[in-house]
Image (cartoon, rainbow, N blue to C red; front, top):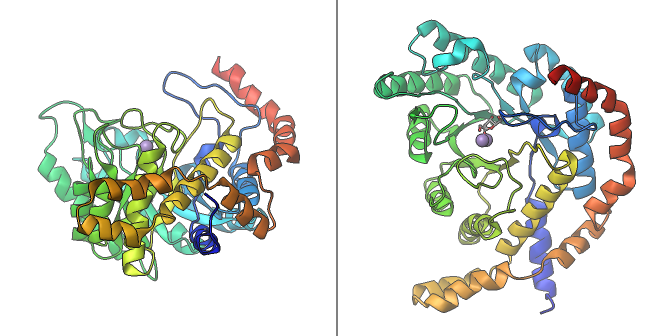
Length: 398
Ligand code: PSV
Ligand code: MN
Ligand code: MN
């Protein structure tokens, strides 16, 4: 069915409102705990990661910011901010969410803010407060908090005491925020802790955020759920409570997969966007959410998969934005089961790619981002330049 000009206007408006942030760590060689498959063209420095994010934004037009991990991208803390900001500006992007890292240092074996040792809790807190300084210096709005804390064996830690330590630590972080700054509290059901994780689900993130204050919101990483969990219901509840801060997008086969968004279950991603677009339609304004990717590919070419992810996100968001919400609301009111459901299916099965091509044309970018990237010669240059550094890593790894 051809789309009307009203739908085209609606689609363009939706696309203009949708930006998705890329993770710096998605462009470097990473692997599973069983090994790495090195890519010759992968980024070997923060500047290269930002350059890769820049080319993705250039060809897709929807990825204007880059999330950074403090330990990996700011080894000298705040002192690195001007240089990183300069590189970002050169590549047409800006610094996005700041991710403190309180899980890699040896002192965090038994946790960070939940560690029974007050000295370790202090070390973790001071790293997070340093990260807030980076956030302020770089003008970044969001501090994105994920904790590996938990225990591996029953009875080896006081779950309640750890909860209190988290509350205390996070409250201190909250009081260090100012201006438009926010803190996003991420949850994860397991890994690396396998008996209990201190912030295991959305309820725990919600409670901690509520204790902290209005700048604290829940971060939903789509990978961090067990199979049967209805993620879109969590999204709907958090929206209704004004407690949803943003997303880490990926796809899940179990409870933490860094798989391409929508590669396994595109209808699920669509249902999440449906909840957001329905909320937007009812309120007449979009909720203030940070859409971020959290994927780190070991097998696919990293830049190409990021382009694939950004385009998939746009397609699924657009499909959800095109739902006829007036019609849907009327059917829901009468409990017309089939007709209500068909409103979603109609939108989901609409081929929105022609609209996306039109939108790209209107922005002066190539209609096919993947083709444009392949034609640019960027990857060949990156492989030539970075290859010796990356291949050196193979021999030292073997
Ligand atoms: C943990 O699994 C996580 O989802 C957190 O967001 C981390 O910051 C990110 O992955 C990168 O390791
Ligand atoms: Mn995440
Ligand atoms: Mn994860």
